[in-house]
Amino acid sequence: MRTALDTNVLSALWSREPLASRISSRLVDLYSEGGLVVCGPVCVELHASPSVSEAFIEQFLRKTDIAVEFSLEESVWRSAANGFAAYAHRRRRLGGGTPKRLPVDFLVAAHASVRADQLMTLDARPYKEDFPTLRLITL
Image (tube, rainbow, N blue to C red; front, top):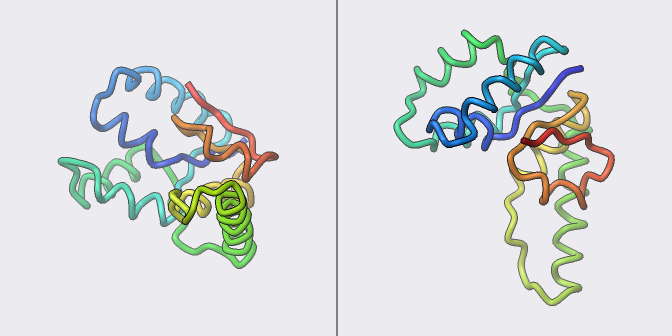
């Protein structure tokens, strides 16, 4: 079972947040169950992590054997677009104004839906409504 990773999982691990040891243990289990993957947009967000260099990111991903998929096929882009459009429509209809969530969240979920079996995230809330069939792994 292939697991896609949300940015918040790796940034929490690297910044040694209280959940870091549980994250590390869970990643080992998920890797043995079928491997780990991140999409290009996650790599973009990882570069904004505090005290993390590009060399560190590349070395970490290589050493942990986390696959990186920079090329996203049309079905991923369309799924992300449909999810973001539905979210924006729902937000406007409820009087919330312009969208507050970023399109990258929808790309991460769409990538997990199309190219993996599940998504590990520390915040499942934003994904549940727009990607109801996506299996979410949380701590």
